[in-house]
Amino acid sequence: MSNAIEIERLSYRAGKTFAIEDLDLHVPTGSIYGFLGPNGSGKTTTIRLILGLLRARAGRITVLGDAMPAQHARVLAHVGYVPEQPHLDATLTVQELIDFQAAFYPRWDQARAAELVSRFELDAGQLFGRLSKGQKAKLMMLLALAQCGDLLVLDEPTDGLDPVVRRDILSALLAYVSERSATIFISSHLVHELERVCDWVAVMDNGRLIIESPMETFKRGIKRLTVSGAPRELRDAPFRMLRRESENGAGESWVVANWEPGMLAYVQGLGAVVNDVIDLDLEDGFVELLRSFRGSAAGRTTP
Amino acid sequence: MFQGVDPRSSIPLYAQIAERIRLAIANGTLSSAASLPSVRQLAAELRINPATVTQAYRELEEQGFVEIRHGAGTFVRELAPGRRARERAQHAAALVRKLLAEARRAGVPLAELQRALESELGVKST
Image 1 (cartoon, rainbow over the protein chains, first blue to last red):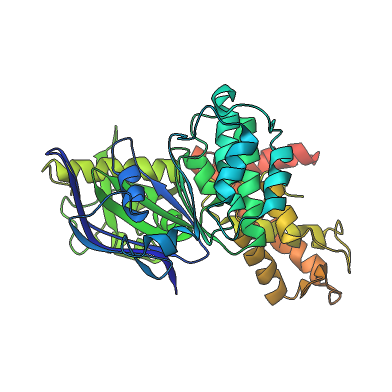
Image 2 (tube, helix red, strand yellow):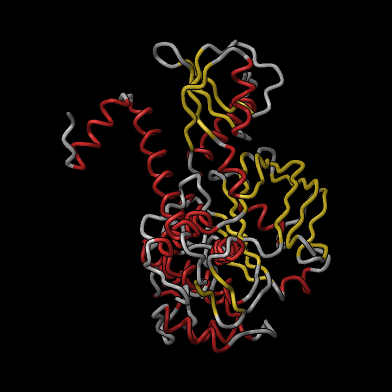
């Protein structure tokens, strides 16, 4: 089984305004897969479809080798999930919630749960409703890790938390990955955090997947070029032009994807001079991709 | 050893980590038979994917710098004479390339760069 999650030609509609169309997604087994996208892009909806909490109109979802939602009972026994909003009973204590969760999972790791209670400095007797935001997030992560799943689906597990809590949660997650070769599917706005840990990255906007790529390939291919003397029309460009602007003075600034060093020859072949090739980080790349995608979606032409 | 490893750089993290370790071996910080931190330990310390650390260690093994003994850990190998010096020379060349690229980007002419280098080194130019 080479993919822990596989989605093919998925479509889903909620009301008249929001739709997911023709979504394809492949999450390699053993990867830490970062799922990026602005608010309202469909990340949480996609996650809920993966877990069988929503029904698609068309398409195929396979999780850990089994079809969803048909095999949801079997699949969910092996999937840890941290939802965007903590949904636990506010009148139960931390220990009661742990015991309650444990009853559903045959592979529940009692020792790990106890270890995480102390590492996260949680008070086992405290009511869930009385926990701080950070403590709630830690408990949600504890519950997901202690069930020893082969796949963890994390919906913004650290967004809106302070840096100390974020580090604690991330460390616990990485320790888990070190011990078990689990697959992690993580959606977040914290681009720099994803850049640290993820080996795959996908970007969604407005219900569509814009890119899915190994992190390294994506980052290696996205560059800002300063160019002068390029013709208006580029024929058969071997890269993808995300943005092209003339700078003050002579040159132009290009933002390109799928760039390789050998492509300098192509640009020089146009009679142009490349003055500089500048690396972009994941955040810049993400923003440029979205801008380009929205530009073309709005019917404007991108050169 | 791993100060300044930058996830935002376009140089892949595993390559940055491997580079740091090669350098530590080249300058003697890590001597022969020294053990590297475990994958789990280093991943936790740098808050990165354990697979990234594994990839760095594998690259170092392929290049003959370390030996991965399963269950025991990763250890620096005995290097052929001259290899450490060669490694340091390569690193020096890479530093100079970086400096030259920065200077070009900032529009600093070569002659001025050379003068600055000499004055920093305390060399009197004639």
